[in-house]
Length: 332
Ligand code: UT7
Image (cartoon, rainbow, N blue to C red):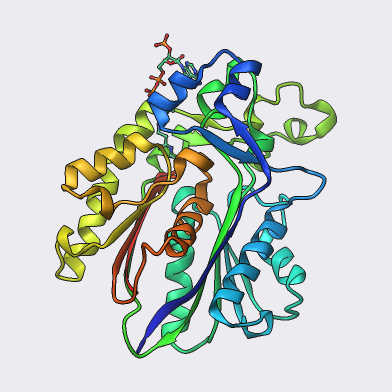
């Protein structure tokens, strides 16, 4: 069995920039609080009259295809990670397949939240390595803004999340490539970071739109402290696991691209693992936390900035709702 290799990266973020100052004008928060606790300066929110999860993913895909010198018709598999699909069902994978005009190809939906992109990458990697498909499109795309409570009641999550899409295109290769992926979950903590509804295991009366009085269960709930504590442990563990599996040390990492959850989390990992500033990529300052989209957006930007070069070792790592956590080690 050979390897899979990333041959193209692309991303798309909506036009509308939402600054901390704007949020401070509509709820009880401040630029200082947000920057100090999260590192975020601004994020993008969609315009519901023109953006969807699937069409942002399509725009990111076109960028990646152009960079790779490929066309839509080359894609024979879509693996789409999102927890904010355009419809409750079907998932956004088929909507992207329709948007790209790729009739008949499979579209797999992955819903592992912040770890979703690495989970999706691992699925595509297996299919490419075993020869089933030749050009896999791996997507992370999210619209968080429309589920946020933009009042003081929702401020602990409203200031964190943003919208956007990123993709990677994978093809077979004789040389490494994706070296390994490492996936984990612990459902004990499912309710520490979740959107409860529209859940199916509810009395019928609670699922009939005309009877729903309390809509708070449709919004993001996050026990921030608990998530933070687990995140810093699991991130470092799963990065070390990837290094051990490939007989490497932290010095072999050219660039760590952590899920952009909170700048303080990235800085903690950097310090704990003894990585230099050049070894860690962060863009949460500009986009906030875009869940499954954060790693591919960051990877696409890092590549465009010349921070990912031939033969480099790139480490991806994520932690989020589930809890789930994951890492991938890639030889570029
Ligand atoms: O990507 C998925 C994974 N998610 C994460 O990794 C998120 C992990 N958690 C975090 O990033 C942090 O826990 C937060 C950024 C969400 C919160 O930071 P924190 O330092 O843990 O703050 P806190 O929740 O302990 O809140 C401290 C204070 C509270 O006031 P009191 O009780 O001390 O009076 C909050 O009510 O800050 C208050 N607060 C705010 N104040 C101004 C909470 N949100 C805000 C806000 N603006 N937006």
